[in-house]
Image: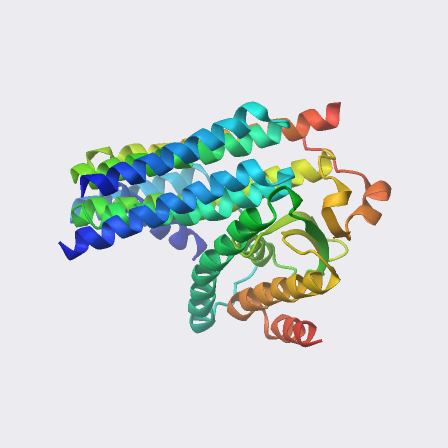
Length: 173
Length: 117
Length: 88
């Protein structure tokens, strides 16, 4: 199942590389994907990832809007404060134990408003993220809420129902 | 003709995003904040420029431009995270630029983990 | 229309110059890596502007190659810089 997905993704990239959707490129892509996954085995994945298409679509929409908003926010900091721009390092609870979900949340953080993952402590279930922009404790709390919101949206798409519930409760607090 | 105008607008917007990102790279005070300027506005700027270019070429070329955008989405966060982690562990983060640092209390006891190999 | 393209390229050249300032100034190896990464993104963008101006898609594979090389280069450099910090 996982291998089929890898082959499909590689074939998709192959077709894009050729830039033409013909029988030759599609079959060639599937063949190349098959050979590549045979030579380099994709890592063993434990269990299945619950995927909710609607929440996933909402997540993609959120990230697309977010990259515009976050670019504007970072640009504003640059123009307004420049060298006096400040930031914060926040500790956040890590709500999922699945490596793949952690990787997706980390990617989402790196794309969203001025945030960056510094450390992940899997044993203590903690994220450490850097946020650019906060100037006082109130801003820090706003940033913390926004970061928890990002994690909640990813868990809505990929997490277990319990994880999603915990995320919602944390954010509402 | 309308496509050309939309394309030109996208290119202009993209170029100004790139300029804002570069400005951030020069003006912001620390490696971490500069990394933000480097990744976010640049990525958006590149998207806009690629979209502007995609409107002016045949569909099969436009599809390959989409591939470039996909690569950028996948790789930009990885670079940002690698540099950010190195910056924090390497001690090039000045505490006076941070409002709070909730990682600092944990660092001395644990210390940076050694890279494999 | 040509004026628009000239403005776009001018703005991007200015961005490139600013990036070079950070590249030469440092002060950190990581700053230079970030600056170089931005510079390659700018090169990709400028090539895309060329593609748009001449309506010529034959350079697009170059963009794909650049995007991949930029990633491998920056990732390797960042790993190397990190390791050097530890040995200091």
